[in-house]
Amino acid sequence: MAFELEKVVPWGRNMDEYRKMFSLTDDDLDRRIVSFGDGPASFNVEMTQKGKQVISVDPIYRFSAEEIVQRIEETKSVIMKQVKANAADFIWKQIRSPEELEAIRINAMGSFISDFEKGKAEGRYVDHALPGKTGFDENEFEVGISSHFLLLYAQLGLAFHISAIKEMLRVANEVRIFPVLDLDARESVLLKPVMDYFGADFNVQLQEVIYEFQQGGNKMLTIKKAI
Ligand SMILES: C[S@@+](CC[C@H](N)C(=O)[O-])C[C@H]1O[C@@H](n2cnc3c(N)ncnc32)[C@H](O)[C@@H]1O
Image: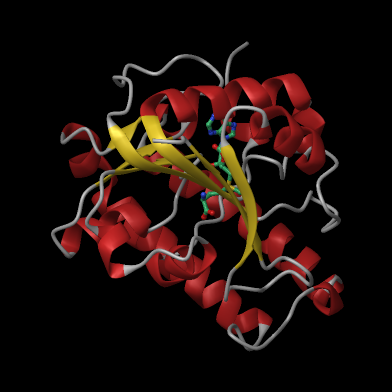
């Protein structure tokens, strides 16, 4: 099935948020990281500016910078309207207001856009849709992360998520997923079945992190190979 830009609502987070969402230590930042569903986040560009390496994977990367900018323009006011209408579902502490949220997101996506074509040419932005097999080697990465994609889009079904996480675990020694909520900000119905499924062969843990923007959204799922 073709991946359509019209179905994507681009909304990118920054490196400070990634560090908090995934409890990334200074040592972690020196590890080989792959980020799935990375979209228009500025994690990759900020990491690159600091001399660190990360590869971002997302089917949105098949589109041009202009097309992605246009989609951001089409959707941002709709998202902001929803955020304001549901302001009570968020914790306005680290991010203090809807206006600050919009500024942070626009800034992150602007940084991504200005780096996109260069990063694509350098192989840092890879066009690929999970759960399809990537071109990466087994254990090519030490850490595989997914922010606001896996578990969140519960409507894609358990089989999709299990296959996607299996591919992440093929290419990375450990996988971290944040948040463990669904689009209605309730615990994802997939969380328990995913933990049970991978718990048979992997070290699976639910860990509290210091990032909390959605009410109750301060947990990350980690799945590690026993090595
Ligand atoms: C809500 S955005 C999150 C962006 C970024 N990770 C962040 O937190 O700022 C979800 C991303 O998942 C991507 N996505 C959707 N389907 C995907 C798939 N099958 N494989 C990989 N990424 C996918 C979308 O293109 C979008 O960029």
